[in-house]
Length: 261
Ligand SMILES: Nc1nc2c(ncn2[C@@H]2O[C@H](COP(=O)(O)OP(=O)(O)OP(=O)(O)O)[C@@H](O)[C@H]2O)c(=O)[nH]1
Ligand SMILES: [Mg+2]
Image (cartoon, rainbow, N blue to C red):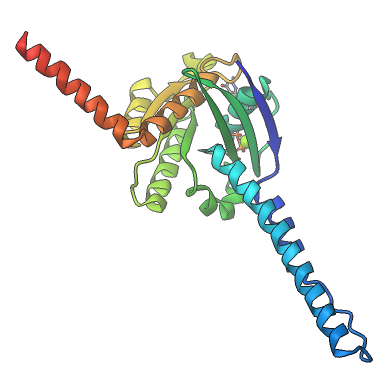
């Protein structure tokens, strides 16, 4: 199974760098004593240089967009200390972060295989601490799926995760969105404050394309399964209509056969 993992600053950084190049218009060096022919040639040269720069800019932004289009975007939300970073770092780097280091915003990328097909995901790890609430509005849109994370030993973190769902719903106009509800600290289940049934109810509130899972970031239980399950939900949502139709047809045929029998 091929696996590729990276960790980088948010994607916007490289784009704004390209924009600076584009805005720097080429200067015109025209000698006041030039003949009309020389002036014309200088202007043509300037125009060509400008077109060249615009082409470079467009190509670079196109390749960024193309790369982004290939990758599925996931966003991890939850209160501070719920275990978001520990989850994504285990998933991407197979390493357990024992020491708590509050996140501001990080992006991770991993390629892996789900049901025989390659999956490539850009995963946005967000800040749960209240100091960074100003960043929040950017996290609720533009994602193909969300992971709502809480610590099963903390009722407050469960309530906070539910609050994130409400905010996403408000931003997405209730359009169908895949969600994984993730209860961390499964290695400390004896101290749980939130039952599995409550986790499942939460997932039900997330809509048709959702699932519930309990993970331990410490011993890596269900970490890969969490992301693979979200990929399945995204695939289910975007399954081509013909595929759904043919499945319906197959079901109908099966049903017809059954009634004959
Ligand atoms: N025992 C146990 N500890 C965990 C688990 N997940 C996370 N932790 C610990 O909980 C603490 C907080 O985890 P983080 O992943 O940094 O929390 P976060 O949600 O990213 O927090 P913010 O970045 O502030 O939003 C760390 O010390 C982790 O080691 C888990 O499944 N089991
Ligand atoms: Mg974090």
